[in-house]
Image 1: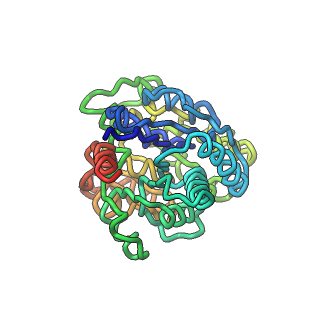
Image 2: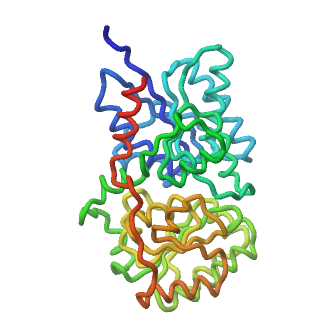
Image 3: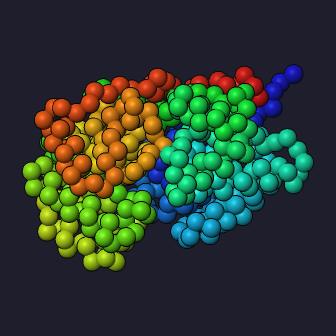
Length: 376
């Protein structure tokens, strides 16, 4: 008997999501007799440079459905996605909903899926979480709440490492739901930046030389929503920039606060190179050619380990523990002495040696689809 084609909804809402759904969409498309992938863009990132350009760079088609939720409080954004996504579930009746990462859209789509299923009293759609099991153990982070709740209600948990597996097992999750498949972000990187295949000229545009500049990203509320904290970070970055160029592609949230706190003038007086948000190819090119990365982004932290670039994480905790133990990342918080000291060690060639964790090989989407083919 011929199998029915299974409709798969891939939910995306922000920059890191797009890099994760792209390899999944391509892998599902290899099996048209088995799967019909649909891309749902919630609109959580509504800035063009944080959204549209990523679809173009990643060679993804336009989303099948855009929910257009936009900004708001966490409650408003989560509720908005739930209401809009429930309508999509009624219309499309998918076999599987696949959520990725840990943003508000991830939790909202997951909650809407299981409540939709409960209301109909049916076993489907199945809910799968890609990048499951990551834990910072800091429940003041909204993303940590999103991770915990999404993993609790998901049917299939695709993890990036044994660290994530351990977290889920410790929380009492059924081992049969857990599948260690590797880091999905490595799939996109290895597709577009294999060997010397770097097609972006963004470094040259800003007068930067390979291995001779620092890349900075800042967006977390704890770092950018408080003027004193943001100013403290900018001061040390400005000081470092006097001896090594620093380029700062500015997130819309950070840019808004720089204006609100009247800090743009300070930044522009320094030698920090200020830029608008960059697309996937330009940003990844800058990342791959940098000497050091300063970031509060878990996704960027993960990418630096894939690229073996020293990464100073401007946070007190991280969900990507493997990048600390085996990879190229170091937690520095906003300790100015620690930041400057670690940058100095990198430049002096005394930074720790790193390795790429197992299964971060660019074949994660393939493993996920093969698992689904075997159990669905």
